[in-house]
Length: 188
Length: 425
Image (cartoon, rainbow over all chains, first blue to last red; front, side):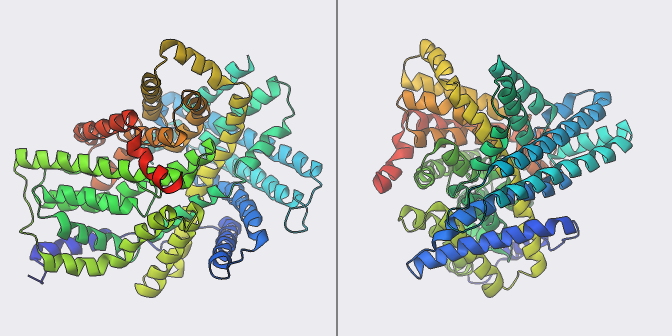
């Protein structure tokens, strides 16, 4: 019985229909380019380290430190994309039973908190950058450069949160509540 | 006083739906200000919290998992699992569990497993005459094997937070993960007998061979990852990079199914997931540092030890707390909040951090299967079109085998610990 039974064929066909990742990149915006570059460089650095350690048997000293710095950038710059698309992780069970009327004010309050936190964090990062005058360990660059990128990341997160705040504020309370409820029910 | 503010503010923020990273950061900032410490500590601790080489495993395991969803890999594995165990009574139920085990060896997240594979599994089972409830229940329960069998994102986070060896944690998850699979398969067999579920014809070695040949390349992924780490060839971070390179090789060279657009799509998805996790870990580092400086765990530990001086009763209490938190909180967030509180207590009671890690993650996985925030159920409900409430009910019976495995690992630490002891210690 080397041939597939009709049922096996049918299931394979069905599976092909539900396939997998799409190549729809319409939601990727110009703001995402910096973090895509950071991610690509991070991959290349770690792959280089991997290659030099296994193939050349002599790992490059700077790769580990620089990879860690790029991971930090991935977090703080990637965070901008998360704020823009609302994909930061939050707990949503309260929206299931909060009274409808309170949902819009709650969401506005949350966005204000987010704006405030990232602005202040950005401010603190400037202070940290100014106080840091040491160089990176493995290459002769001031470590403050890393912190300045974090500054930009924090402020842009705050900026996109302001944008979101304005968008939500313009919608009617009903619309905000409906969107939120729907997302919650879908686990969005 | 400052600590009270910290906790109250944290829970208010979390409840209102403030992003977890901001909730942790803001409440820590409030503590720092009230305690009169320099504010700049906040950002400094956040940055140093993710300045970690082991954490690099996270984006690359996520990327590898996404890439493995291209090129018909899901299809090939499902077909192979079906040929292998489909002839058992209740066949597709076993296929479901078996495919989840294979996928667990490629990706590190339960929710992703439920979304990708779950859709196919539920459709196939319904079409073959299984009850929808049974299909949903098996799919939901088996997707929680994902983060127990390596690679595992939650175990990486736990390892970083607890300063435990991620390699040991990964290897420790292997036996418990397989036990979960066996217990679920027993449950499937029991249902199949009771409800007289269909099976595929007889075992067909030719078909097994044919599907194996097609699935062999993707099937090597878990072997590379698990074997590489267990054999001491790779660190977990290197294993993640190796998995990405292998997945790229499959997608670009062997199956030629990846395009530039796919790569950008997958990269953006990976960046979003990674960054949202990294931001939580960053803020959690500040939170954990505050708890450690105040010996909060010591206080709670004394209180717990006052109730129970037995190590196992202590473990049971900790599991109950974890289960409760897991009902309401997303996995990564729960780990970052629980570890700084529970780990010092566990260590002083002589509980192995690796043992605690496996228990904690397994426990939190059960939270993914229960309302109000059962993420796996949300995803399954979405992909299968089955109502959420019905998914909840359908999954309840399948919590029993998982709970039994949890209790077994709680009282017999060797189940989790013998492999890492054999390989590492």
